[in-house]
Length: 144
Image (cartoon, rainbow, N blue to C red; front, side, top):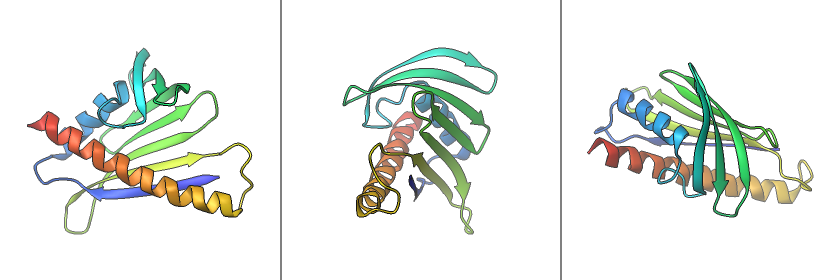
C-alpha cells in the first residue's frame, strides 16, 4: 500500500478562499494543475462534488468521485481501483496557509513491506510534492 503525503506553504498572495476556488477548478479540470492528466470531462455534479472521467498522459482512463468539504479538503476516489487522493488546506502555527496532497493507493504485484514498495513510497512523496507545488503555481496564475 502506497500511503504518502506532501505539504507546501502557499504564497501569501493567495487567500484561503482563492485556494479553495482553485481546488474546485482543479477538480473539474486538472490540466495545468497536475502534469499527469491530458484530458478531463465532468460527467455529473451534485451539491457536494462531482464525478469526472480523466485520462492520464500514459493513457489510463479513470472515473473519479470527487467530494468537496468546504473550506478544507477535496477527496478524489477512483471507481476502477479505489485509489484515493486528498487535497487538504490548513494553516501552520504562524497562520501561514498550507496545501497537502495525500495519496492512498495499491500497486498491483507489489508486495507489502517489500523494498519495491519502499522505493515506490519514496517516489510518490516526490510526486506529491511536485503536484502540490504545480497546483499552487497554477492558483497563483489564476489569482493574478
